[in-house]
Amino acid sequence: MPITASQLRDNVCRILDEVIETGKPASIRYKGVILTIERPKQVTRLAKLKKRPGIFVGDVEDVIHIDWMEEWRREWGVSE
Image (cartoon, rainbow, N blue to C red; front, side, top):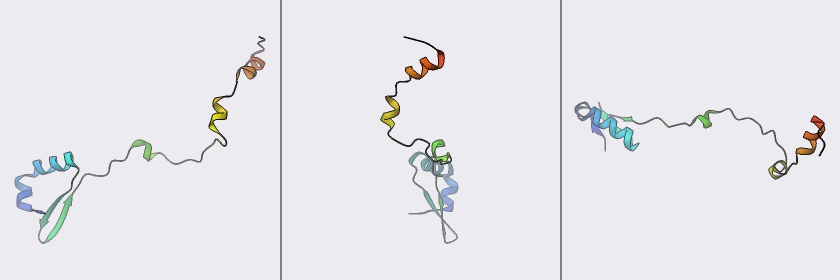
């Protein structure tokens, strides 16, 4: 149920705190029009990242179980 503009004026800080704490919007009737005060939608930093195509094709398990020692030994000339 909307509150009046006078009620908003008398309790503006309490009403704004309530909107922040509960996330529920407050409706105000002013000159026959219903106005709404609400919190903006929270967007995480992760959601703001630009979507990019994947670079890995195949099974992730194959990457986990790769033995890199043989390649490392060849690269650095190390023998067992």
